[in-house]
Amino acid sequence: MITFKNVTKTFENGTEAIKGIDLHIKKGKLVVIIGPSGCGKTTTMKMINKLIHPTSGVIAIDGKDISGQKEVELRRSIGYVIQRIGLFPHMTIEENVALIPKLKGFKKEAYKEKVDELLKLVGLEPSLYKNRYPLELSGGQQQRVGVVRALAGEPPIILMDEPFSALDPISREQLQDELKLLQETIHKTIVFVTHDMDEALKIADEIVVMKDGLIEQIATPQELVQGPVNEFVRSFIGKERIHAAINLQNPAEKEISMIMEPVKQHATGELPSIESTTLIKDVAQQMIIQSTHSMYVVQNGERVGIVHKDGLLRELAGIVVEGA
Image (tube, rainbow, N blue to C red):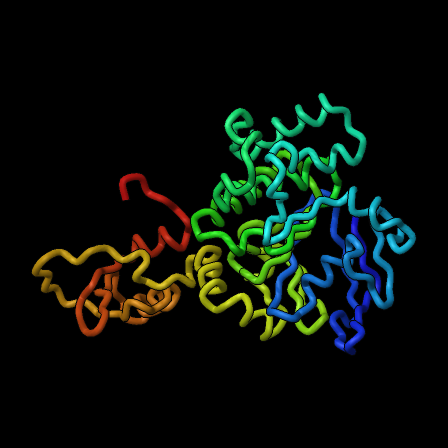
C-alpha cells in the first residue's frame, strides 16, 4: 500500500532528519511509528501526504510514485488527524465533517447521510451533536469528530499525528479502545505516530521503532516485547513491559508470589522457605533438590504464603481447576 525506498530528508538548516529508510505498510493495517523526540517519526508520516518533501528516495502508494501527484488531490485522498484537532470553530459539527465530501463533489443527500453514519460510529448521536459547534463539546468529543472528519471523504489512508496525547487519561484510553473497534469495521490503512509505548502496544498491528532518523525494528506488538533487536529498543519498550509479557507468555517465569496460597493461621509445620520474588521454575527446582511437596513463601523474613507441588504443576501445565 505505502512503500518507502531509501528515503532521506535533510532540512535547509542541515538537519538530517531521515537517513535512508525502507518501509512497507500493508493495506488495511494500523501501523504505529514510535520513537523519542527528534527521531524522525512525524517527518516520516508527513512525507506520505507531501506536507514534507523527501530529499531523495521514492515514496509510492499502490505502486505509484507520489512525487508526480498534485498535493491537493493527494491530500483529499488521505485523511489526517492531528493532536490539536483542527476543527473550524465557526462551523457546526455537521459542516466540519462534511467539508471534504463537499470539496470532492459528493451530493448533499449523500454526505448528510454519511455524517450521521460516522457520528454514530463514534458514539455521538447526530440529533444531539451535529448542529453544535466545536467549543460546545469536550476535548474527547472534539477528537472523535476529528477522527470521523478524516473518514468522511472515504480515504483509503488515514494519518494520525499523536491524536490523543493532549487528552486526559480516561478520554485517551476510551478513544484508543474506540479506534481499535472502529478499525475492525472500516479496515483502513492507518499510520499512527506516538511517543507512548503503551498506546503503541495496545492499538498497533505493527510497530515501527525509530531512532536518529533510522528504523531500528519493525514488528508486531508481541514480537517486539518478546524479541527486541538491540539495547535501544529494549530500553525504549521498558523492562517492566518486557517482564510482564514474559510472565503472560511463560508461566515458569512468573514470580511465586503470583500463585502462592494463604498460610493458615498458627501454621507451625517445618517446611523449607523461598523468597516471594523467586521464579516458579526455580521454586520447582528447589522442591526437587529438597525433596519437599510444599514450601513457605517469605517476604522480609515473614511468611506471606505457601506453595504446594500440585498447584505448581497445574500452573506450569496451564491447567485451570474450577473453584481453585
